[in-house]
Amino acid sequence: MSDDLIERARAWAAEDPDPTTRAELEALLEHGESADLADRFDGTLEFGTAGLRGELGAGPNRMNRVVVSRAAAGLAAYLKEQSLKDLGGGRDASVVIGYDARHNSDVFARDTAEVMTGAGLRALVLPRPLPTPVLAFAIRELGCVAGVMVTASHNPPRDNGYKVYLGDGSQIVPPADAEIAAHIDEVGPWSAVPRGDGWTVLGDSVVDAYLDTVAGLAGDGPRDLRLVYTPLHGVGGSAAVQVLETAGFDAPYVVPQQEQPDADFPTVSFPNPEEPGAMDLALALASERRVDLVVANDPDADRCAAAVPDAHGWRMLRGDEVGVLLAHHLIKGGHVGTYACSIVSSSLLGKMAAAAGQSFAETLTGFKWISKVDGLAYGYEEALGYCVDPEHVKDKDGVSALLLLCELAAAEKAQGRSLVDVLDDLAMAHGLHATDQLSVRVTDLA
Image (cartoon, rainbow, N blue to C red; front, side, top):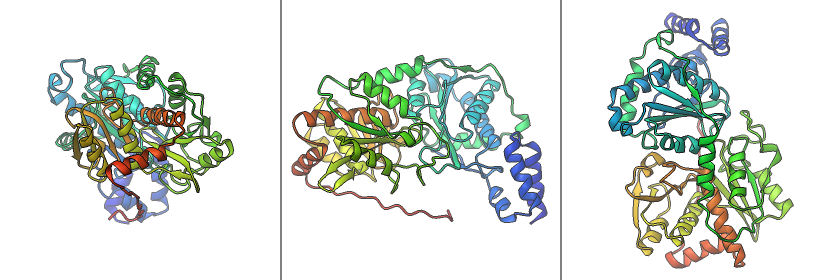
């Protein structure tokens, strides 16, 4: 182990405000774990258009309180440098902060609030662990210049992340990411970052406004639908169930083992509904209860998955299939504007939009690009992300997508049909579009 590495590790440990990560680092030093130490200090966790995301732990190449505080300070400097009038339309210079139920999410949210307050900005913290789309909604609802969501979405339990939105309610894109990263690089030691304690914990009014707005997306129509739902140990459970009930649906059967938030995700090896095995408990409950549809959110509830019964049992719908089902539902409902998807998504949406006389746009990969489309009526990406109400949430939203999928399924059931019949109709009208996904996991990111 090099003297330089030891010196940097000791300097980090001396400054680390978190006793857990400090002890972790001191143990690595004591036992001479050079490879692990080298990885933690091999550069820094890079800030980009997805913000930060990485494994929890000590060192600049991990997610921890020092890295998060520096990111918050860099973001605050960027916001102060920009014209607040340009960023927020002359609104109060406030930043809203949300967090999920992962390890340290609440801690990172509090650190962010302290740093924003110390920088002279007004920090507003959502009242409890909540879905990412609530944060995206709150930015515009409260007139904030930016928003931060502490989440690693569907990553493994050891990860956490830091998503940044600007005042339009959408995720950052270049050049903002590079400019924020440059400010982060200029931040001094953790002890020198100004911090304040005058931040505000919001009440439930903004959460209620989100839930009412989503429930209001469903029009009048059939509501006879038997559902199984799982939040996959995430934060979407209460929001999804409340929205369904407010819209007039019967309460779903919720997978009991996965109903409550749990940062360790004990029943799944990987908390992503696309991964093999993640939906096994939900599908087993669906078979037991003989339901019409299975719906799921990922842990931060910005994505939605679904399964339907077919001749061979239960069939998981691919993201492209759910994407075109929702587009079909919105087109039939008279939603006018641009229908958009990314270049990794099916070409079917473009044909559907053309047949309906609507504009179509294809974007680069990522919802940060889809949300920037002018006149967006609907956008989706095959990785289970759907934006059905861009006026209020300019990001993917698994709760509103889930509700509208259920509305469509109930309408079809009332006619003796299923979502598979709708997919068949679309294939007959526009040609068969087959889709599948191949995941390759690597341990060496190089």
